Length: 565
Image (cartoon, rainbow, N blue to C red; front, side, top):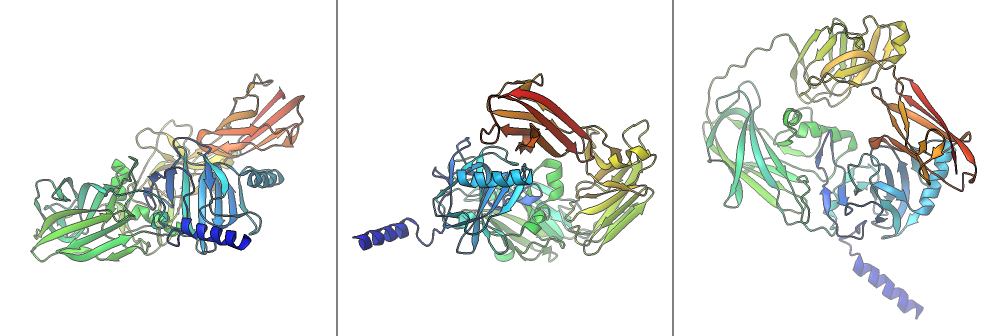
């Protein structure tokens, strides 16, 4: 009888989880997606899928497959509370933005946090510590870290390389029979000898849908010449949600022949910033629209592309087709015609610039500024521009304003910017930093850095207007749970809002009765919270709470209060 029962259980398990479904859904609700794999995000590709949690936090989260918890992360940003589970098939599943872990996991993490006296931890768990089965409860969904609303971030990674893989390729129960939507087309002259519609600048064309595909409005035959690029503005949607998601693949055909294509089902985190070359970055910076390009920049190291650039020099009419697909194979095509037609073009001479080359280091130096750029910092060669000016009667700027090129040129690898600190008092040297000046509002944002030998140096990953400034203002602490420094107004927790107006909060320490206690940090809301724990805090007595907050320039604020609990 026992042998028969075991056979039934094994057979049942095989029926529920067939080989073509190596992972089950991590939530036991209908799976609706608000973010797809490799979706285009600011400075990165999305590394997983975002699963809606019905607008709530606290839904049970289950392991997608057998394995063991290999890593536990608690962070004020990023994935917030996150679990990593290694599986026997060589993959790792990731669960991010959790509200809390399962009880035994939470206790294990909390003990380590108290031992280290810090909220943020990244714990490599021993393989035998937390073994889990497929469908076993591991945590509860939330909105922790950099999440913009309640959801579960779910990933599948290659365990060895930690490269994220496309979870939508593993037969999760998700319905999608909706094709991508194409909204606009742009056509680009890619060098000084090229033109689009007899101009040396890109042109945008509106799109209409009929006869089963997308077309340019009024169906013009567009005159072009030379090296030509195309880009499309497109989104994908899945059944049951209006959330905009990304496309999975693109192919470009000229006269029915394949010319260029890409499909993205995995990538390296070290290369995720190449998303800024994958799109028309200048257009994104100007309009916040992400047009996907059909050519590869020389400095783009993503290994997903195949093919070449369209060269229109033969005087003929060509039929162009751009085909987009989502992860489920739903496709949409854009068809139009161009005619190769020569016209001599004159490109205005650029004055006062230095040529920066993408395949070698670049250095620029002028009065009061030095810029060092490593090889690979840029995607293409470009003419670097620079000017400077002095703002009179400004007490927080200790240098000229340096207009370092323009913000529409993306930077891949950090570059080193040094600015001479004219007139910076000795007493403020330790408080100095490099700040970026918003061209529209005039507001300053800190890029950090430090003083040495008359110069302030920082790493930057965007161009713009930069100055030397100082941060001498301490962080602000506002008690939310203790009134008048002596009355607890929330029964089971103590909360503070901690903010810093310039260099940013670097760290904090909270103590009750002289002992360190765990204040959880929600950076996006500038909140820290201590949940009163009767196992660690003696109750029915008066307690003293102390809080120390430090910013990135060493300015400190403190709070002292008492409460009865």
